[in-house]
Length: 241
Image (tube, rainbow, N blue to C red):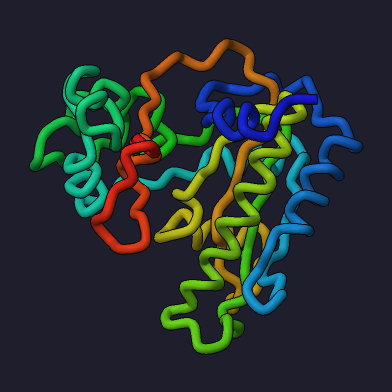
C-alpha cells in the first residue's frame, strides 16, 4: 500500500495521448466515482454531477472542439513563467516558459491557433483518450453566506483532488481540461451533451493509459517554513524551514 504522501507527491498531469483501445476497467471507474462521492462539500451540498463519456464517436466530436487562449490568459500566464530552471528553483512557484509555445513567451503574446507543446489543448483539439469525465454544478445553489460561492468552488476542488488521487493510486493517467468551463468550448459541450442551462461545467478530465511516457519537467514547491506562520502572521518557526 503506497503512503498517502507518496501518492500526493506523485500525482501529475498526463498531457500525452492515451491508448484509446485500453479501456478503463469498470471497477476502477467506480472507485474514482466513489472517491468523488465522498469529497467534502460545503454544507454537504454535494454540488456536482458527473457525466461519463466513453462512446468513441462522442469522444471524437468532443475531442475536435477547439478553444483559443484569450489575451488575458496569455498575459497572466506570462507573469507566472520562469525562463530557466535556476529561476524556477529560486522562485519555487510557476512553470518553465519552455513548456509553452515560443509565441506565448512574450508579455504581449497573441492567441495562436496552431500552438504546439504540452499545453496545446488550449488552442487545439484535446488529445485522444478512452474516457472523459465532465463535472458540472448547479448555479442555482450556493453555500450559505459564501460570497461568490467561494465555498462551493472549494468543494468542486475537493472533488477534483479526490478523483485525481484515486486515479494516481490506480495507475490511471489524468488530465484536467479547464478549457471546457468557459467561452465557446463550454457552449459547444453544453449543446452536445444536452446539459441544462442552469448547470455549469466545472472541469472535464481525460482518463486513460499513456501511449508514451509524459515528458519530464521540473516540479517545484515552496518549503514548509516559507508558507507556514507561527501564532502570528509573519512569525516563522526555524524548525519548519
